[in-house]
Image (cartoon, rainbow, N blue to C red; front, side):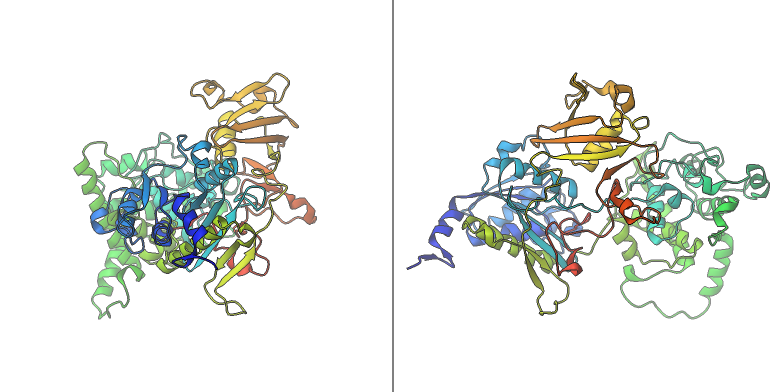
Length: 617
């Protein structure tokens, strides 16, 4: 007769009592997960999270209260969970899981690792550490009403990196600066106007972006040049004709030959002068770039005085009060003008309180900063003939936010524990990838289990001998770019050491501080690296070695630094007559994310997986 302890077999209950588990992340999923673990009977838990508690967390991360704002998530989560089960032995770390202190030996002391993370870099790292330590990993993710849980076991299942991931979304610099066509382009522009806040794909400096090089409230950029960049072929124009046509050169708000921040300071951050500079004079100057507008609708400059007169006249009529929540209302043009003015005045006061040379950092939870980005982005949308957005929508896009649903986190956390119980029962073959859908499928199921896929033979992480081919220009790619953009950003290494397989064992990059810094500015070709060269990159923290085959090319698309052969591009290539030619891929992937395990028959769930570049919880 089977002995039970509660609802569990005695053997399993005893296992829960003695086994040690690691929870990585103490946010939305993490809070639910920690509560589930102690109530299920887990007694030895370690939790790590670098984040601190913010007011915006309180609507779903139920272990936290208003009095905890500003404190460590991991520490407060521990204290709150102990109220459910005072006998539990919980260790909390307010730290990054990528800290070298948490090495392979640290991971080996756990029987099970459970991820409750919100960023890909940490997910990649934990995936590699669990592979190196040969510890089962339960990966999870949510996005709104969608969710996914999957199990990763070395040699038996796909690892987190077996399937290509969509690249973090970036935008061509010229599009943001000169020719925005989507609301997100205007939002990124407004964030950069406040201070640098989002990655750009392009390094080419078109005229409008140079006018924004100083930023208004953040750290000032050293590049103060404001003359047009004639190197941009699409913006090719006749400077003499343009200068003759530009009518804003001597008016208030003109910032020729000075940075935006320097000029703004000289006006005392006058909101009206700033408005006319950004939304009138800059746009009029942009209009002089004739070729930009041959196949596009030209932008329409705004003038404060005209809008003010129009707004006052409209205000004399009877207006019905707007319905709905304030943040979800879409303001009119004059409403955005007033919001812009008020936000600049508030931010100006904050700068003055901080003293000379003070700087502000954009934060989506700072009302004045959010008002500035909302108003500036919406005014630019109107100028470029786009539908304006509510403050709620702008905040969601500016903060890369998918609305978090507490119930989704609870369901996913419960599924994590169920998969963990299977592993501890020795029933790994019963583990599944489970998708949580927004709507029932044809079988009227919200939860859809899928069999775990085996490891990919071509995976550059969990294959027996990880190897990858990278296409780049050895005469233009620097050692620093290889280290930061390719090895760290693209392949997720933390502290790579790189050796050239040239028969001499030449060390190109060393993780030891100062050893190879002199190489950073040199090009790969300076070290004899050419087409067909092989580089061995080792990350000793991750116990990971990657062999890189260099494929030299001088035909990369504009704004593309390198291509990983065999993956999908994040920037669609031009149409090609031969579909087989599309196998060579840029540094990124298609926007559609593929699940970490097979989703045959479940294409509607592909965005509800931990591969998603953004997973708020």
